[in-house]
Length: 372
Ligand SMILES: Nc1ncnc2c1ncn2[C@@H]1O[C@H](COP(=O)(O)OP(=O)(O)O)[C@@H](O)[C@H]1O
Ligand SMILES: [Mg+2]
Image 1 (spheres, rainbow, N blue to C red):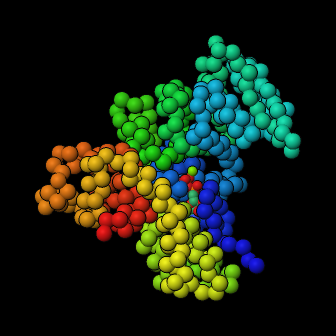
Image 2 (image 1 turned 90 degrees about the vertical axis):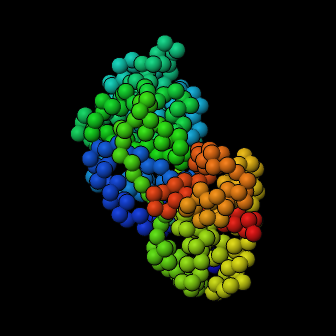
């Protein structure tokens, strides 16, 4: 039996990767120019996949890259060591060469520890005392730049970058990497838009206006049609375009959900997708997400709940409508505050042309079901 051609979960590449052709081209150029870039999009929108794919396509350009996920770091020491470890692994090999190179550029010369796992892969860490920490941090932050002096292009990716605030490393990091100019391209990624906005758009913050804002959008319907249909066909099953469009109406092209839907639909289908199979798949998915959405709803204040309903009723536009404010018994000042709160919680967002919309298309669909 053929295995399921769809995938959802962590980052995807190769045959699981759909479109983003023009974005990859643009990001590639930016990376080669050594720009610093901010990429934000909701969780599970495909940020990591997109950036890793672009980096892969830079192979042959003599570009080395370093990828650090800040999500699960809780102390500065952890940051220093995790970053040092990925730098060591990504920039140099074999092991003795790494150690020598770093010894030559680290001014402080702390002890470099190397541990090997059962498969023989090394991992690196620094032994440092309390007094050394500040210096060690600066040295480690400068490693990419020192390395770039050999004429090597370096791209450093910080995933879930908003977490740097909790580590109290924001200004330190900014002041060091500012000196790296176009020798090192820094890519800052993250899913908490309101936090990232404050970091990069607030005049009082260290990273104010220091980056190019790179927008990634949902993947277009035409691309999903081709992607989904060809995978069904290649595995001996059929899906008509109408059903792919129906998936798209639900997920709005949001990558994770679109793959999830296609994955489950494929599983439930023997030969050909029909109305019954489609409806069953949709129920399965909504049931599975239900608990999470209920928690999300519970976490809203009463005024935020009213506001969600107004956005649903009005389709996100011309929201300050007396009739609706009266229907839900909310004053326009409170409504405004509630909208701000929903933006802060990353539940909704706003575009100039479309007005307010829900960041999570399935949450919106689920709410519509509840809203009668
Ligand atoms: N370009 C893409 N083509 C197809 N599916 C994608 C693509 N990007 C992301 N996905 C889907 O979304 C899921 C989450 O992707 P990921 O890159 O981890 O998102 P993020 O980093 O924004 O949280 C993947 O497991 C995959 O199912
Ligand atoms: Mg990610």
